[in-house]
Length: 180
Image (cartoon, rainbow, N blue to C red; front, side, top):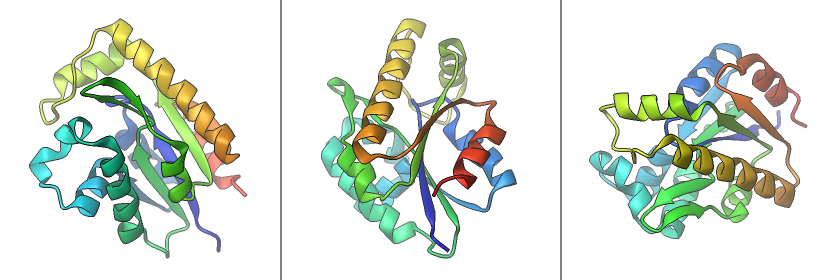
C-alpha cells in the first residue's frame, strides 16, 4: 500500500477543518493541521496558534515539516494535511514555497474556496480564533492569490490539483481515490 498525502489548502476561515471531517466520513484518513504540526515541530504553546502567522514563516514551515514527519501515521492509507499556500503575515500576504510541499511529498492538492462573505462571517463569528478581519474585497484577493499559488506549486511539483468548494466532498473523495 502506497500512502497518499494530500495538501488541503485555502485561506483561514474557508472551512478546511470542517471539510476534512466530512472527508473522513468517506475515506480512512489521518487529518493533520498545519498549526498543530508547527506547534509540535517547534514546541510552541497551544495558546499561540493564531500568532504563528506573525512569526518567521520559513522557520514555521520547517517546524511544519518536522511535525509532519513526527505525526504521520504510516499505517493510514490517506494523509490530509490541512494548511495554507498564502499566509496573511505581518508584511501582508506571503506565499509559501513549493519546497515545503515537496518536503511533505504530496501526491495531490485540494484548494478549498467559498464566497468571501461566508469567510468573513465565519471569521467574525469564530470567537475561538484570532484571525485577521478583512473586508470582502481583501478576502477575495487573498483567496484569488491562494488559488494562483496552489496552481504554481502543483505545476512545479507535477502533482494534480482540484479546486473545490466546501460542498464538493464527493468529487474530492473521488479525486483522492484516483491519485496514482
